[in-house]
Length: 222
Ligand code: AMP
Image (cartoon, rainbow, N blue to C red; front, side):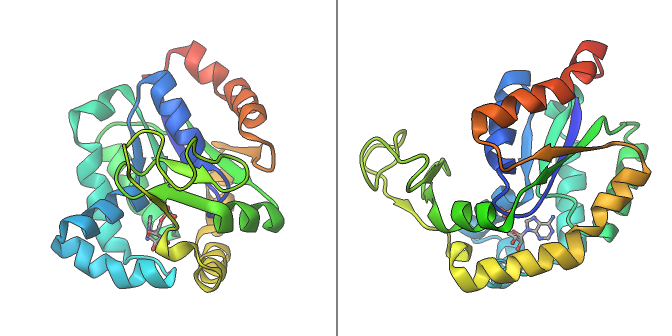
């Protein structure tokens, strides 16, 4: 099963990608996660990406395209994959299309997570992440068992992502509208887009996702 999750920051793509990746045993490829780990490692790509990410802008296309193209050639993608946060520009989408055809892979579905501005702001401003394992929490909707600490990593504090402050959030949403939203029509024209109501809570949206994915799962697409 080869899926792309498309939608604005805060729509719940990462949360559902984790759930489905475990359920279907396919890798969850998040370009944001890969870039954050490159920053942590102090790699050259990380150094290049840091300033763009902290301001809420996009990392240059060639950097992410190379990163994803390499990742798609790893053996675990044979069973499929779930891309979260890529493609984010028309250039990326076209390069991705080309990479897929060179790898003789076909995209099964693009799931468009559509949410109201109110939902996005509520989720982004309340989001907290574990500085070690990256597990995500929400101050109101999904608090950790022990306030301020990760449920999985002993004594590790959960923090607010640097780009989850109000000014940067605004910029990320503007960038989404300008650069990423055009992909909705791009994938509509390829007849692979499904609209998802991302205002729903996690359990409800999971049920809807299962319905949309059922024909792919049952069709045994590999
Ligand atoms: P995310 O974790 O998906 O919210 O991504 C965090 C940040 O990483 C974004 O605001 C961008 O700066 C950068 N980023 C992630 N994916 C991409 C991409 N496909 N193209 C360009 N920049 C990206």
